[in-house]
Image: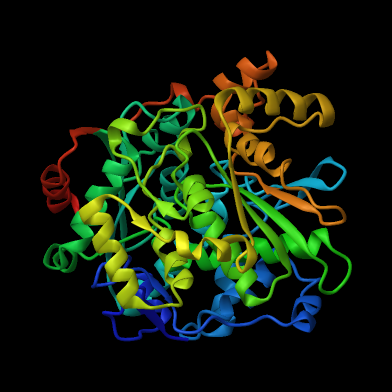
Length: 466
């Protein structure tokens, strides 16, 4: 299995090379040269597998430069019972609608599902090659803590995580900033998430700086993250169906497009997915694209701080991978669109809009703060389950796209304990906090506050990189 760049400027390389690269040298994103296919018979043969075994099977379709036995050992370590006491259970909400519980890991967010594998495979490949890696990333809330918990104490890896100062929940901040491991570095940037992400892309795009400091990525620009997320779409389909070929729809709260991109790829590989329902919050750039065919990211001044803060994103770093498919995998067209985006602040693919739903199964909708509150309240009253604000966005939009006889799985993005203020406002009660995390916000916090300036981050990295 070899990987290419969405912009066409990279010779095909194997998985372990792109694992350590992050962005491709031409600024594009890595994708398989050809997408592996899953037959109905193969899907059926996987019904009795554990999550770790299924992950080894699915990831093995993308990874042929790690021995099969080693890959299984890595997935068994990533998805061990002590890491995930429960793993991706279905949680019924009402007839035909269930949550896929992706938030049972160490940081209570769906990012753990891929990041725990990434931590294992990073350490394995670096040890095999005798290399070190400095991971540079940006987070709007959940990626940072999931990456840091997966990589804390790992040999040969240091993490430098940028987050928007004052724009995460208190619990999210505490999860990240309370870590005292020597290989973890938290940088709170005076700006919004998109500006943090711009700094990461600027430093990763400076090939001299990137090579001198062995920069890598754990954001969803890293293909391994996307590949690992495909696994839970297969797992969810297997648990929601009893018959070969039965259709399932998935609703996905989405800001950076990585989570739902994995669903798109699973569908392209042959998993019988009917609809991919994209749920946006008030920062509805992606919803606008699927409604109009025009992609129009917004500046920091027009990016709202909302009660589903992990989706307060106006430039989706994974969207380019879907655009690559939409324009028939034409790298020249992708380069032209990215040039239009840089020059004009937008690009127009409205001529291809009919394909979004008809060919690729995408529909989209928007949820507001009032929608979140009413959805959290209604779900609690109907099912006794508390859901977090992002999952509430997914449920709200999903209910407008139900089809008779087709199960709807809403991807749970976090446990409500991470967003207690909104849960209290919606229901009048505080969500339960796991015993191991109850004193988290009282623990000392270690982080650096910086102005929104790539040169300041670069200087910090020079002084602290492995």
